[in-house]
Image (cartoon, rainbow, N blue to C red; front, top):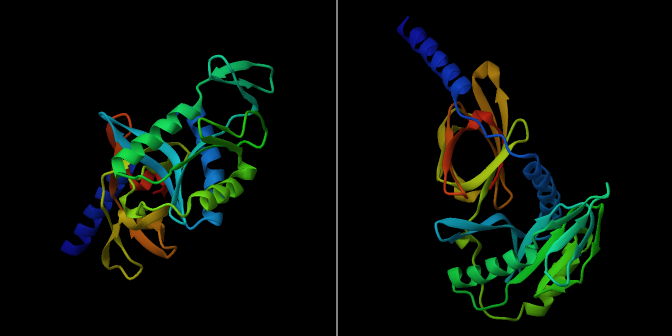
Length: 284
């Protein structure tokens, strides 16, 4: 009788935790649109290159600088900023600002991504004590994007998604003989967390371990430093979630969790807790 009562109490506790635990905050539409472009670029990079790190960040004052991707290929670091802009994209020769002529006829002035990419590269070289060349690149992910831009500005490449892989390889051939490497394990990575409604937030994940059970019911801990991706699938009859895990070396595994929460330090200096059962997938 006592064992049955404990099971009932545990079940009630799990229901309360899973229904009242914090979820992923709603994001603006422009952020969701930008994330879709990054996802498309990530798939291309993942297929073409062995070491692709998403959401690279650097401490900067009390906050962080962030770029969408870092590709390490034959020792050459390639920093990539992704823009998912539609229409015709050009640059004002007098101000240096970019402009966008949208398909509906709207003309819009937009901040140039060139300066922020150059700033990130300079801070990156200082932070890691890196002397070798770091390649900077702005990739335009949207297929319906007509570039009226030079191939590069201030040594930052400006390329459509279709030419991204070949541009990376060309720059790697140019700089591969330089000395000095940046070990992947030293890179600070920003974690992107998606909800079941495709909302997301991003930041530095404080959790170094996620408590789980394996398919045999044994207690295990997932080491987040070695994870690339987690897909979370609810199993409501068991009051738990199935986690399909991909590690950075390509290996996969299946685990289960009932009530874990993740602590995320956001890039604006704030932090929040997010319940694992409110998440659809996580990109590390």
